[in-house]
Amino acid sequence: MDATLPVNPGSTTLYFIIAAAIALAVGYVSYMIIIKNKTISSGAWPKMDDSLEGFQGPANGVSSIQCGQESSYVASLSALFSSKKSVTEEGEADLEEFNQILSKLCCLKHDLMSTNQVVQSSLTLTFNTSHDRENPAETVGRCFTKSIPPRDLDIIFSTWRDRGLALLDKLCTSYSLSDKEAKAAKNDLLSVWSDVYDIAQSVCGPEKAISSGASPRDVRGVMPERVQTLGPYTGYY
Image 1 (cartoon, rainbow, N blue to C red):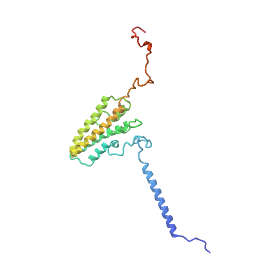
Image 2 (cartoon, rainbow, N blue to C red):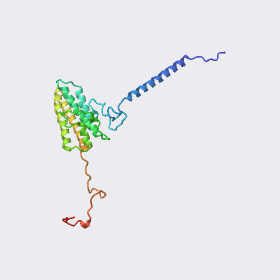
Image 3 (cartoon, rainbow, N blue to C red):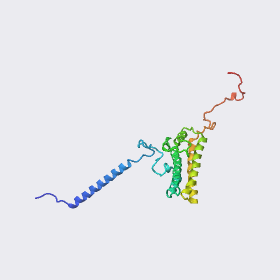
Image 4 (cartoon, one colour):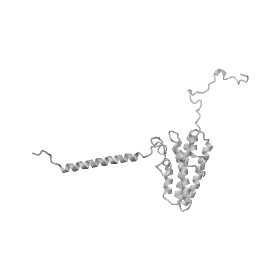
């Protein structure tokens, strides 16, 4: 008598389908792990150790303008010009410099608001004699060390503002902006400039002196009562 159990073709097909599904799932998970492993960590130094994790957010990769994710006004300006084409020969060059100014404002904001106070995003910005008074990375470094006078900071930001407005006037013609679009673009530029300038004044300014006499527990000089009515000493020590 043959005790061998009969082969069930249906069971074999089911096992094959389950095995194929498991193999596909494993392959997909492995592929996603490999892809995600190539991304740069948030706040990581560019071209350095990707495992270095910061807390101020990514510096690149989420906007067509470097550090553009720091301002919704910059995103609006970028979207405005990306949908249009220049009708003049110098339009594209003017737009490139205009975007440089926006990048510098945003990268300064990114660095100045970072928790570790490291010159990072502004380190890769290019120096342009048309609108830079000094290297942007040097400006951030001087802010962190509180060694930049308020007048110097005002001159640096005023140059960016004035050059940006001059370029924007030319761009309105080159890209055939309507009066409404031109007004909105100017408001966006002044808004991002004002936002970053306010942050720079707060971070770069000197530390406020502690108010004397604010509390009885504050450390300050004390004059004994027995000498308060005496006149100044004019003799020799």
